[in-house]
Structures are given as C-alpha cells and as structure tokens.
Length: 439
Image (tube, rainbow, N blue to C red):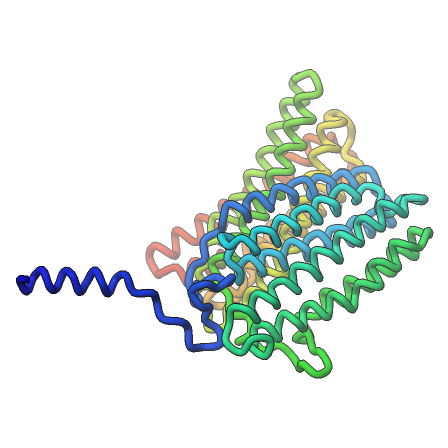
C-alpha cells in the first residue's frame, strides 16, 4: 500500500472514531439532552418558533382584556396576567437555551409547556370574572405546571447529562429554581380558589413577587445556597434572538388587530387614514427597536464575560416594558379604528401616548447597557418629552382622534430619524461608539 493510501485510510479511521466524552462539569456528553454551544451561538429551532404561536394568541387575549376593562381594577388584572405570561415564556426560552430541542424528551417537554401555555391563554378572559373560578383554576394550574414541570425537567436533564449528576452546579441551580416555583404555587392555586376578584388579585400579585424576586436573590434555598453568575452559562445570541422574536409577536398582534378591524368596516377616507396611521406606528416601533438596539444588544451579550448576568437584567426584565408598551398601543389602535372620527378621549390618549412612553422607556433602558458610555439615548428623551406634551395638549384642548394619533406617530418618527442620523453621521466618521452615545 502506498504512503498516500495509508494516510487516507488513517484519516478515514480517525474520522470514524467517536468524539471523546466531556471532562468538565458544564460540558454535555455526546448523548446529552443539553446543547453544546459552549458560550457560542445556539440556533433557534423550529419547535421554539412553533411554541411561540401560543403566545401570539396570549398577547391577543391580553390586549382584548385591556380593551374591555379600562378601569383601574381591570388594568391591574391585565398587569398580573401579562407578568405571568411573560415569566412563563421567558423561563421556557432559558430552558430551550440549555436543552437540545432536537432530542425527543426535550421536544416532549416543550410541547407539554406549549399545551399548558395554551390553557393559560384560553382561561385569561375570565380569570378574574365573578363566578369564574373554573377559568382561574385552569390559569393557575397551567402556570404552575409550566413553571414547575419545565424547571424540574431541566434539572433532571442536567443531572443526567453533566458530570456531577445532581450535585453538579447546573442541576443544583435548576433545583433551586424549581423549589422557588413550588413555593409560589400555593399562592397561585389559593388565589384561584377564592371567589372575590380583589382577593384573587392580591394573592396572585404576591405570587408574582415570589417568582420575580427569585433571580434577584439568587434563588437562595436552604441547604442549596445561592446561584452564582457562572451557573448561568448560556448562549447569549440565542436569548437575544428569542426576545427579538417576541417583540415581533407583540408587533404582529397589533398588525392583526389593525387589519381585522379595518376589514370589518367600509373602507372610507377616515378609516383608511387611521389604518395607515396605526400601521405607521407599528412600523416605527419596529424600526426603533431593530435598527440599532437589537443588533447592539445581541453583540453586547455575546461578547460579555458573564452573559447570564446580562440576560437576566437586559432581556429578562428590561424587555417587559417594551412588550407591554406594544400591547397597550395595540389597544389604542383598536379604539381608533372603532371610532375614527371621535374626539381623542382619555382612553385613547392614555393607551396611545402611555403605551408609546412605556415602549420608549423600555427600549432606551435596553439600549443603555450596550452603549459604550452607558447613556440613555437622547432621541428617546426627546420623544418622551414630545409625547408628554401631546398628552397634556390633548387633555386640555379637544382634538380629533386621527390628529392626536398622527402627532404621536410624528413623535416616533423624530426618535427614529434622530437616532438613525446621529448614528450614521457620527458613526461613519468617528466610529460607532460616538454615534451610539449621541443617539
């Protein structure tokens, strides 16, 4: 046999050898249920996109709840429902970051979480209705099932796939998380069983305090200690992409509301005008988030030494006002299309200007950590000031609804053009850092 033939045979034999098993606690073995991203990019799977379809429905249910319950109690109920929906989705996004959706057990877990999430969405309209105990029980039971079942599964997957078993840092971290969700479960289920809507609201709000307080306290658990930053080894780019996709879900819900409302009525000049205004508002919100923020945020978390810490603050918490603002603005679109020639009343002013203010505040806070100088964008300060001035003017001087909404859309346009022009003018000549600082 020639030397070349021997070399080719050896190369083929070497290629056929199985990869060596991982030797470290955090690296999964070849047959692992976990992703092997090692801090790199973990692509979003088709199953994760399928899972998100349930949350399109959930966001629609949220906006309808706000639309039909514009009183303070109704808004408080909507806030509790929104926080529960966001927390269920977010922790499932974290779970899919760690686990491999191509493995059968992981697929079953995600489909189970999808079914339970659908149960939550179905129960939302009557979760606080008098005499609606059955819907409240369904909502609470599905929420607890998602949080406890999914977190427990990930703990088992990490114990099975990593060195150290149940004593490994990943498994111990997930055990802490599971126990915190178990601790809040009696509040969720107890709140569902009481008949008084206000008592239910109070118990569920307390349950959310427990759930949202866990990450801040490192999921401190007797006998298991606290979670450390190194326990949150994730693919930062994957989580950034998942949150960006949820922004698309929220914006898409507004487009659906606008399109369906417009299709149900005669397409006269007034309705055509407000239809274009509603679409322009959604398009500008997309521009403001995705033109600079999404890319800079993904780059920031991917390059950070502790991506888990960034993911907790920038994506887990700071994306809530962004999504919430979009949902509130979708309610304003529905109000506008329902009465396109009516004066701009308090409900429209509160949802249109208030929703955009919340969106700009959340987007500015999201962009701030990825800015080299840690600045809140000046363009967002200007846009927020314009929206506050327009709100005061709309309350003092009655104006047609299309005029008020058109003015708020112009305020968004100012933000988008200011940020774009500042970034490209200064970024092209002095580097992106100065453009970021002045945007």
